[in-house]
Length: 193
Image (cartoon, rainbow, N blue to C red; front, side, top):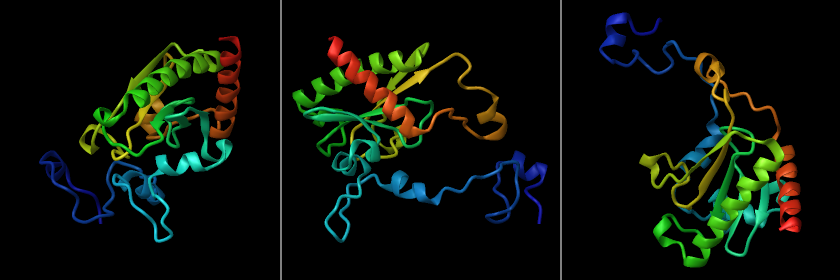
């Protein structure tokens, strides 16, 4: 069976059935559904949270990809980074919205953001950053039940042809190495400051 014909595609109609060939190669990642679909904090039968941002602080830093811990918030590498050094700054408390943060949580998230920019600059000298918060699923929040802020380093040409032509993102550094370098830079900045 072939994909939709030109008239069908132009009309915006779907292929005859799932699995019908079309112009896209697909990389199936069903393991991400726990991450993508986990918008509500749920408890496992053992009473443990399934929220990845609630579980991470209970792990060792290297295992949980935690770069820095604070009193009310922490910094963790994104498991699915847009670029090397893509960090998430999360409150320890499970809250969904910016308006639910306490003053102490909000202030520490702001301070950790400033420190994150310094640490990333020390490690990889990006030319710019994207900082952002996606509140709610419709805004792009894949774990919308736990507030988190993105810190994404950017370089000229970092959005090259690969994602467009091959639907692939090349990341030149493994997460463990990125975590180690950022954690070391963070400590050095703290000692200097």
